[in-house]
Image (cartoon, rainbow, N blue to C red; front, side, top):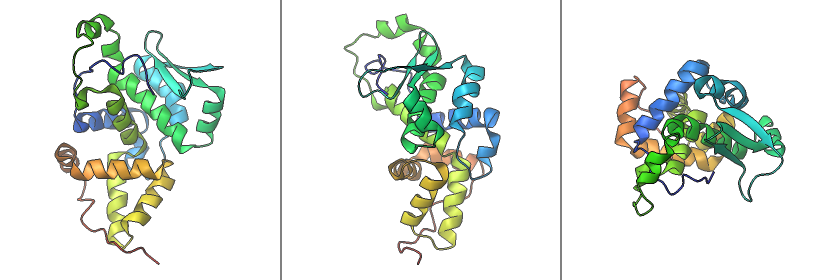
Length: 220
C-alpha cells in the first residue's frame, strides 16, 4: 500500500534477489510450502513469524487513511490493519492475502534501510527513481513470491501441462490452490517465464523446466 517511502529510491533489487528473500523466509518459517502444494499461512506469518524475523507486530486499528487497506509503520515496527481487513484475511480473501503479503514484503526488504531515514532523505526528492528501486514494485513481487513459492508453483504448472491442461485451466487451478487472484497468477507466470535471472534461479534449484509443455485447448 502507498506509504511515505513511495517517492524515495530503495536499494536496487532484481526479481531474482527478491525471489531468494521469499525462499529464505519460507524455508525458515513455512518449509512445507516449498515442497507441497498449499496456500501460505498468512495469519501465522502476520501474528508470529514476522515478529520473530524482524520484530514487527500486528496492530489492529479502527480506521486507516482512505483507500488504504493496510500499512507498515516503520518507526514503530507495526503492520496496521482494520478489524474488517483482518476478518477478511482470516476467511482467505485473495485481495487481503496479497495486501498482507505486500506489507510483509516491506518489512523484510525495506525495514533495515528505512530505519536510516537520514540516508534516504539525503538522496533528495529530485532523484529519478528507476523501476528496480521502487519500493511498491519490490513489495508486490515479494508478495507474489511468498504466496506462490517458486518450487511448488513451477512443479505444479509443469505436471498439469504434461497431462494436457491448458494454460487457462492451470491458471484457474493455481489461483484457487494458492488463494490468490487470477490476475496475480498471470502476472507472476509472465514475469517468471520472461526473466532470465529467475530462470537461472530455477536451474540452480534443480527445478525442471515448467513452461515447455502447455497446450492451448482447454481440457474437457
